[in-house]
Image (cartoon, rainbow, N blue to C red):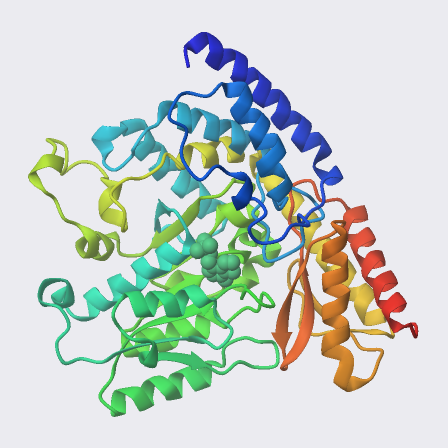
Amino acid sequence: MNTKDFRKHAHELVDWMADYFENVEDYPVLPDIQPGDIFKQIPTEAPKTPESFEAIFKDFKDVIMPGITHWESPNFMAYFPANKSKASVLAEMLMSTLGSQCMIWLTSPAAAELEESVMNWVRDMLGLSKSFTGVIQDTASTATLCAILTARERATGYAVNEKGFQEQKFTVYASSEIHSSIEKAVKIAGIGAAQFRPIAVDENFAMRAEVLSNTIEEDIAKGFTPICVVSAIGTTSTTAIDPIAAISKICQTHKVWHHVDAAYAGTALVLPEMRWMSEGVEEADSFVFNPHKWMFTNFDCTAYYVKDPVALVNTFTITPDYLKTSVDGEVKNYRDWGIPLGRRFRALKLWFVIREMGVEGIQSTIRKHITLGKWLANEIIAHPDFELMAPVPLNTVCFRFTSGPEDQLDQINEQIMTSINKSGKLFFTQTKLYDQFTLRLSFGNTNLEAYHVENAWQLIRETASKLKQPQ
Ligand code: PLP
């Protein structure tokens, strides 16, 4: 493709993208297709000769779009959002145009220095202590793996990196409500799932600090070496908030790494009134949150903060001759701050987003989302046929339809969800609380308005009351 054609097609695509943003609510949020429907439309072999851009774009519209789940829709209320802003999309266009591979300072000095600046901005925006230093990672899963590997290396004086595992049996702790990425990281780090200790939670689904303390002491008595506790500001199921200050204290007593997983809820710390959630975080060793979930920055972009960057770098550094440069002593070579060598220029989109929205723009949108969460929670509490299943500190609401025979409620709630999702009008998912099928709505789309949440609630009420009628 020459630049003349590139210009023409790029303009066409930008027009298509703007139309998509304008019309996204016209698409079914969840595509009504069966497994294999898209695969069978794609030729089994790659084309031997060039195809026209028109043909490729036509297939994008005809074959790919019908199989897309529309995360951009304000009616997407499943999982956690992966919201974005138009500024972040424009930044992605520049990122891919430059194609910068930001493994070391020299391979894009501006990228390294912008990353350092933007990570400082974000740290201050969230009210985190200035003793944290930030680095951008691809996902929270990767950042948590980095935390556990660094904890392991710090606990052993970097011996596992050098000699491999010897006799020690390490243990890692997190609440029983923690995200699956923590157990995955424990497995990848060679600690073994059997040494992962899920700690009991209280009635708010938050970790019970006294159980953590007792479990660590019991493990030490049995000869285990506790290396890391992962606490949550906003668990995946219910956005429960662990007692961060109490956990930090326990970790300090036992010299255990304290990693805070705020993958989703971290964004809410832009609001001073939400900083009660992070009380005690200044004593933690590391903190992760995902601007790619709720801070308007399209996937992927994870902000990882550490107190001791030297420990992080010592865990990951490896400098083959072909990567040495004359400025290595003076600059940040972010390849040493995580797992992959190659790194995208993610700081650019975060910089665009923060500048285009301003801290106040980000705050007001987050505040609106939280207000809508509280509104829905109150509606559910006031409704005789529904029950709120967990506290709603943010904008994730877990509830259940309760009007029907007890032994059929799981099935009825599942039917409510599947029939609505099939309609394409709304997409939400479930969780299990008290061993019961629980409806869960999480809404943080950039363009979310009150009427989207009101419509979702009305649709759920109507569907539930239809299912309640004798067929
Ligand atoms: N931690 C929490 C609390 C999450 O909810 C999630 C994903 O939803 C993750 C970690 C993993 O995030 P990522 O997809 O960035 O690895």
